[in-house]
Length: 214
Image (cartoon, rainbow, N blue to C red; front, side, top):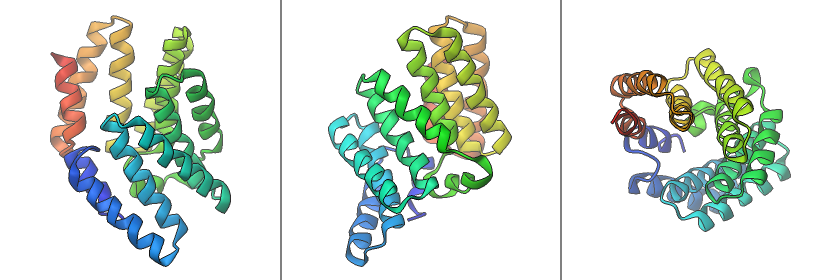
């Protein structure tokens, strides 16, 4: 299933190659009954449909991931499941539910135990949960709490020294700083996002950085 990770990093989450890799993985896992590997395939497909704005399909996949994680009682899978479901709810406009789910995911997260998730899922879900909690808090009317959560997400990403997770944290930091009309911070983050993406070959975060710099 690891083939999906380099594809999403270099092609982006919504690339057809990503859907093909994870779709084939789901078929194989269903045939042999491997539940952790099936979870990885479902999570990858959820990200694919989410970025393509096919939110209902993404939500069904995310909910299936959560049920599977709860069934096997795996803390790593629980963190990832809460992350992808929370993000799906966020983009569906269900901000209060998204905040609750993402905060629950953060509660399950332990960087010493769950650090290997970056290899399997492409980015660190602890960073992701905190990042999207910050955006949910902003839209719910809590700007100071939003900034604090965003700072924590960014600090965790740098502490982990995982480039793709740093790119993801920069993505939400750019979004939040733009809403706060802090143009100098936006400019600085955008330049960092672009430099990181060019160095690592991250197509999605490069596009985000260029848009925000513009």
